[in-house]
Length: 168
Figure 1 (cartoon, rainbow, N blue to C red):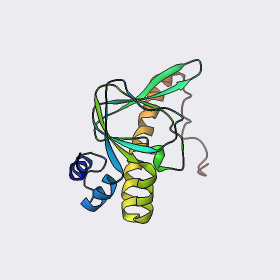
Figure 2: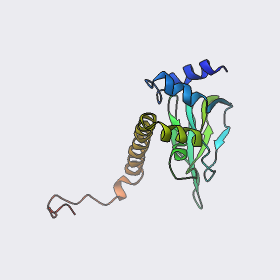
Figure 3: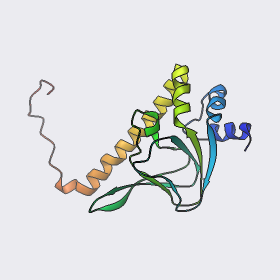
Figure 4: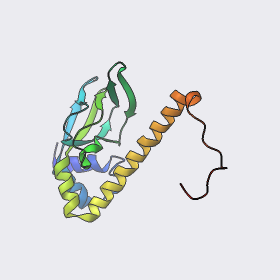
């Protein structure tokens, strides 16, 4: 894929949509297309977070494994969305396994290079981190809804408004 085609692919993703052309060109230098078949493992829980991914097409399952419970799908990620955002933090290990549910095309971006770009260009860094926080926020909200769905009747009731008013 040519550099210009990669820039156009980046621009077409929801995560990077509206980013200035110069930023997309910089990101494209640290990126490559990765095509996956159905049920390919993109990365594993515990792996070093070397890359971040943008889903161009297809669906990716995020799964977590725990002793006695096995592996469970916690979320699916689709076109335009970010995967492996841990690579953009000081958290060096991935917290889930990503597996494709159908033929999937990803943009694989070198996390260290992207972070370096963000540090050299605070405007780009601000844009990437704001967009990453939107992703994290959405995933946190989805997790909260899952907790209510799974444990709804067993969760303790919220305290009434008759508590203290000192903010604690």
